Image 1 (cartoon, rainbow, N blue to C red):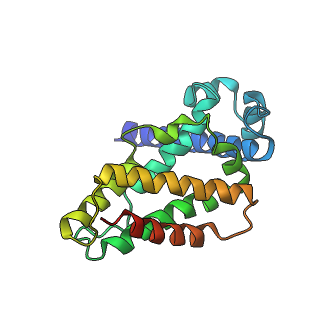
Image 2 (tube, rainbow, N blue to C red):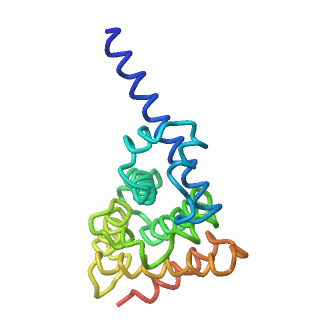
Image 3 (tube, rainbow, N blue to C red):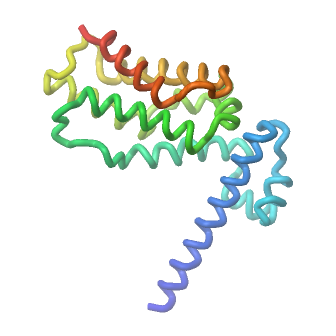
Length: 197
């Protein structure tokens, strides 16, 4: 029994260490840029060894990938999802607003300015939970007849996220001088009308 508790305690400590390294890295990348942030500096600020960094993150690029894992974990268990999908359209709008909230509140402007670029191919990786959850919502919308469109839920999801990333990029270009969540809501409502058959 004690052994299990000790193991759990070690696991919790490991998770806390990883979170601390991750948060320090995200803050430094936001402040200085990805290329100007060194692993040594991350470790110094996170008060950990370089070996500890490599234990959790095989490369500095892994920090960027972790952002996607965090986002996917958040959306895979999205708590505002109504299984009956009584108002699918509003759920889709809420989903995309939650995406904007994650970008603006969790990542923040400075990090997003460095994160949203053509070199970051993780955005288009197939099978990510964030997209799969939206595909599920779009499928329920079609099945219930609440939204009629000629394209598949997968294609509609791709179109919605293409535009959503554009909204985020526009927000970055404008130094965050407008409400990203509000703008994402406007975009999604217009996009949903455009997707209708």
